[in-house]
Image (tube, rainbow, N blue to C red; front, side, top):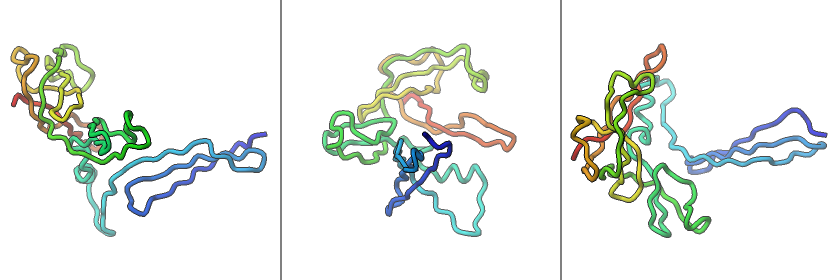
Length: 180
């Protein structure tokens, strides 16, 4: 017989860099762990009594405005987006945060003529797969005339406004690329 209620417990580490969520279920009068999740995060320090608006709050989260990935110090492989475990070394790997330069070259691209809602004002625009100098590949919009983009073109990152959402007008920023 399984009880209908569940309980969630969480623990914040002494370094304040990760949260562990433990999912528990009561089965026959005993608690049984059915899941454990570990999330890395960077805490935002806000003084009591200090109030900030939503746009300012998001600007304080550096991973939203930098190309933050991870690097395995064991095998020296770089990963973007960040990973919590190295796929090559598995448990033996030691993962650390790494800030990518964002410089790289266009591997392949396409021209978007019919975009999703919210991006339709910018059409046509090039969307490319970028091989970063450090190794990983990522997808990004290249800000240039669609006829000017070529495979092998060097690009550099710029942080631009991606869109606006909600009645409060929350502005989202992200990485786009320009010719280097």
